[in-house]
Length: 216
Ligand code: AP5
Ligand code: ZN
Image 1 (cartoon, protein in one colour):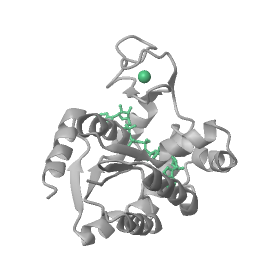
Image 2 (cartoon, rainbow, N blue to C red):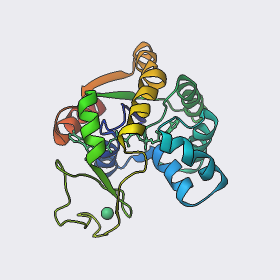
Image 3 (tube, protein in one colour):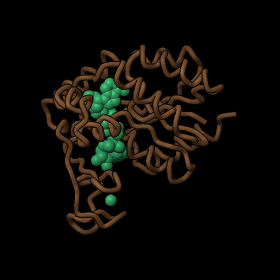
Image 4 (cartoon, helix red, strand yellow):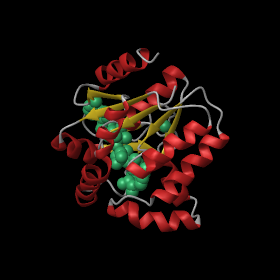
């Protein structure tokens, strides 16, 4: 199965995608992670996208579609979780075409709804493990031992350069302007499922599980 997690910055897409990887053996394709990897490895493309990302704007369709195409062509998986992709109508069309070429389709789109105020709180408290990618939060999900990742024991805990109030404002605007039209797009295609992303992590996970279990 192939599913898309759709939602604004801080909705919990990454948190839920990691659970699905563990519980269902699916492969997470996060364009945000791929772009951050390109940045830190200092590739030409990484240099181009760094400035755009830090401002909170969207990277060009050409670049992100290229990244996804590369993964779909090279990774063998029982299914993919698209996390942070597609984000524009052009990306959604490209994904449909790419999957179609592989004899596959988008089986479900899960839209995670979260109020803007909550997004600000979530983003401003977030930190992640630089080694294993586990996602934490200052107040709602701190590490058990301060400064040490619960999962892998790494002390490389990081905050993202774009997790500040100014970039977040732009990221939200970009979401409402360019990404939210995908809600109608997938609704018309019959694959949209909207869930309450305001609930606790485990409750959100069980709503996602219900959607996944209803895929024929
Ligand atoms: P990307 O990395 O995709 O970031 P994003 O969409 O802004 O999403 P986030 O990672 O911020 O949030 P999330 O929904 O994963 O939330 P999380 O689980 O971490 O993109 C970054 C940038 O890359 C973009 O701005 C753009 O420049 C570029 N880019 C990426 N993809 C692109 C594309 N397709 N096209 C063009 N450009 C692209 O949770 C957040 C916090 O909340 C955590 O602290 C977590 O612990 C907490 N939390 C999670 N769930 C809950 C819950 N249920 N209750 C309470 N707290 C919770
Ligand atoms: Zn870790």
